[in-house]
Picture 1 (cartoon, helix red, strand yellow):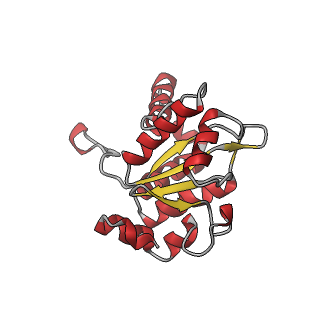
Picture 2: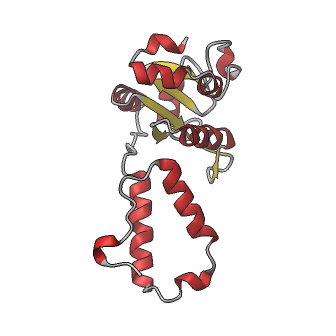
Length: 185
């Protein structure tokens, strides 16, 4: 039994803790929710969807230069930004993007996630230009320094590039902790 003063809240939970909470909600038996007012569940669902996209910037798709300026602003305004995109017919999440986002959450590394359009869109063309020709996603920037794509093979960047190898080597965390992008390479 909870009183109003002892009611649990999600304020202050880390992203991994929130993920764990949501996972427990997903796996809970349906019976657990039968006595809850449907309008309350709908309102909570809408709020969660809103919260999941509150920090996403609507990138302009009509003009590559405008998209490039918007993406550059996102890069400049965030210490760690990961760009992702839908793949295939536009309804599927990129599996490599999911792996990178999950790894950052598991490591407790704060980041901003920004979707871009599919290949051929203005935002994707602009990202490819800003990412030195890397055409795949994810693409990351840490303190305005290109991390590369998923691994060192994306864009033929080679050693010292790739989001996953840089996470595994502790270089992203170190650069963020010390606010020094030179620690990435």
